Length: 408
Image 1 (cartoon, rainbow, N blue to C red):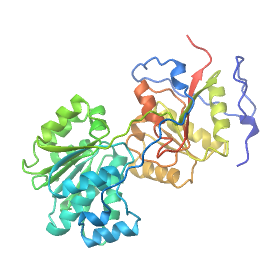
Image 2: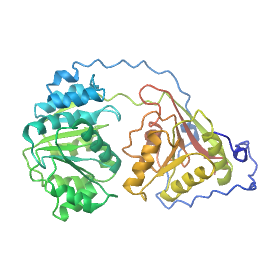
Image 3: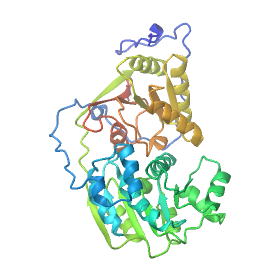
């Protein structure tokens, strides 16, 4: 890509930035959100190290060992599933026995297949309608579960309905009236459909709570309790989470008392992510520095975090004007718009995805080369979560955080 020389980064020591001819100023609106936690810039700096050697997990089974229906095995073979991950290897046999399972695993370790494959194996035997109820914290995660369901169940004549906000509710009502085998949704839209008396969960035999920790973080616990009270008492419950804090344990205990815990979570040290700060003088200079970083040909898939929906959209538009292919995801986008933006990023049609924290929750994106905190996160925990989107699967990654030269 040819560089726009009018956007070369200026030296980052003092001085003021002049408006250049032909360069449109970039000014984000001031944030009206909660006050940020004060994070010293030194916490954003950490040179990547080799870290402890990660011992590869050796599974006890192959997918052929689980006794899955031959059609499921055929679909798995077609998509290249041969060796199960740790969470799949240990939880699938228990789930197939009908036991309640709590799985603790890092993001991106294959937990969706860990609960979907036993469910599909049972459905192909029973053909039970409205029997599987899956709750996820975000639209994107629910959509990813639905995609996996379609992939694993190809040719099996099993039907699902996805019920999330930001999509046409009338279409979801029509899907529910067809009495699907699997219902996948987010708490808010599921509650809405229940109030309209179009969602029936009285026949549910399997209840799945995915990413319980994020559900609690996003304040959905009351909605989950309200919905779960209507579910039949006699059911199988499968819960998955990245952490098991006392509050999460208490919440899970409300839905199942007799469960097996499978923990395959590994430590998230971020030691393999090279972290640094980028200083800027003012808002115009801040954008110039970002554009210069993104014009580097090595930065092939970059996730940029902004603070507000307006700021994220405006930043993506500004990058596009300067010949840097970018897309935005935030709460004002419809589900189809968010899906198109995400697919463009995954397929490398755009090299930059600009997102708010809320919109990026639940996204599972491979091969992110760099995370840039254009706006600093609200808390240090949010920072750790953001930069964990790069350097996955033992690969190296980079993280940059913008810090103003003028402090105080």
